Length: 290
Image (cartoon, rainbow, N blue to C red; front, side, top):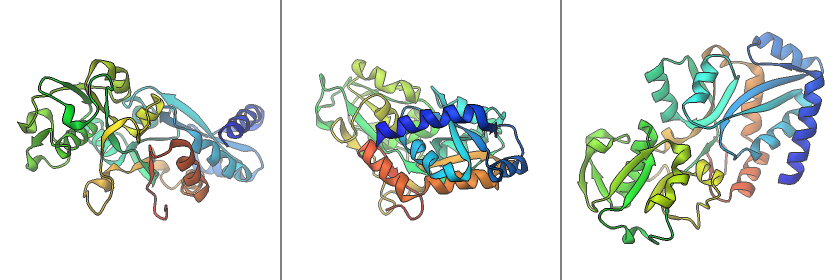
């Protein structure tokens, strides 16, 4: 499926070059008129990482509607919301709700989520040359975690769940290193940008990495982890904030073309692609996903 999908997207993009109108910066009315005219509306979607096979399936589903998703790839989590807010892209799909809320609060972006997608569980990935289990972690070992507030706090809660540290419960789901009240193991916690964590793993005992970045780095969430985040809403009250979303500018939240992209994402066909391609790195999290 993956090989055929890649061939399809290359052919589709070649067609787009000759018959498309680009949605980025265009009005909703223009986009809808284009979709109805038999021409192709191109929607630029910002993503981070190389876990994008679901978008091939989405493009297949949207072909009859005259809608073509064109991925714009970023290398770090700081850029896609700025690009969306500034009109450089039409949508993005890379972040969970807690990250989006924090970015809006800190930077004043006028953007909003328009649809749920997946959960990318955090895992503690071990340096196999140094440790093989949580129990092997010893005083002085270095563990790398994401440097941004929301994912960093989420990583600290995972280390707490693994029994390595204890955090001030008053800080909820986003503690910082300053909120660690006890080290059950005298580990050194090193903070770094999420996309770089897998590259740092050779220099650490372990790293806390989300499913997307792990997949991009060639890590397997089943065989390469020694502890995984609980994403069951019945046992983890924070799960609703960990759902990844498609985001748009607030003025475009009711855009009919964008709604069709969300609808295409939230289909059994896309769920099958995600399950087949990523083998446990992601959990489909939209309403109706099985």
